[in-house]
Length: 114
Length: 114
Length: 114
Length: 114
Image 1 (cartoon, chains in turn yellow, green, red, orange):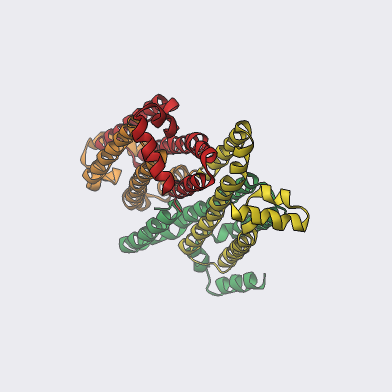
Image 2 (cartoon, rainbow over the protein chains, first blue to last red):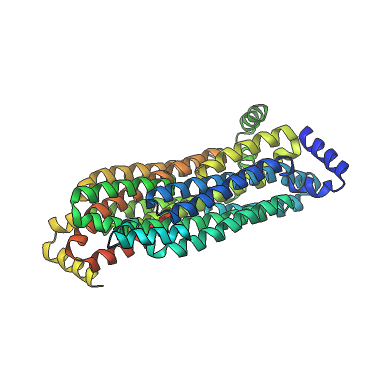
């Protein structure tokens, strides 16, 4: 909560904070960007492996590692979303919280592939 | 592109492209490269979504789509590997085929996350 | 920890109704039981397929169907948990809600296999 | 199609031994049955957890464990299938091996959820 308040304050100072506050992941945005840039590098590495005719199982192993890194980001974002956006909605109204949770359920089904 | 020409030359020099035969995916290499470049673009798109403070569930939905595209490549590569490398090994010796299949099983466990 | 202790106390104090209400899935309990009994039947069907020496890919296809049914139950339960237990906690205290969400994140990682 | 017809004919002709040998998993059949009976017990345990109003995340954790056990069986069966049926087919004809591998690819996609 202190963290949330802190982020809102910082965001207000920067002039567009309610937007960021709503997004939930703003405090960890740089961390997510670092991770996604690393994942982008992994995908370019996969292209080089294909260009170099690398052994298929080695390429597949690298794909599995990249996929896992992506899903770590997805679960982190969902978690941040629950901690920030959904909790904030729960304080405003039940209906709003329910609507958010229904959206989370749909997103979760995509992550789990149902 | 230079690398491609070089490798093709090497294959021609060796008289039959056993190099390609071993890799299995060589015939579909360009297709895999196209797909991986598209996936790289998706990962860059994810970075822009984070930079633009996009709504978490939307980002997660895009991650799920990217993950699926990567796993499609993994299953395609494993399939090509079985069709080419493992089948070729099966014609050479049982021991070699068994060794390849053990490697495939280990790779498959990584893809399924066991 | 406080949240967990509180939950246990509340459950002990009531012994049934509020306990169930707090479990979240109580209203859909019969539905979950029906689904799990069907899944149990699918697992017994898998045993018969093995006993009858059925073709491996057919058995694996049935396993994939059973796995999906189980994961549908898992996602349903997580969703109910968020709608009921976590929302109720959010109204009591931020600390309690945070503790619940951390638990949900850990559970979600197990479902996604991270 | 030819491969499939051949398989059915061979099975009818022999009625047991070669049939089992061709199934691939026959040597480990008892092991698979033991594992599936344990999984059946896990699914019954899940029903008791629901009946006892157990804490949702605990139920979901148990479901994740059951799902993993099922997928271990699936990967084991696919692996046995490749080692036995597909390798045997590879020695008979390329066409038969290709037909088997196409079937494996389809099964694999179901396991990975593509």
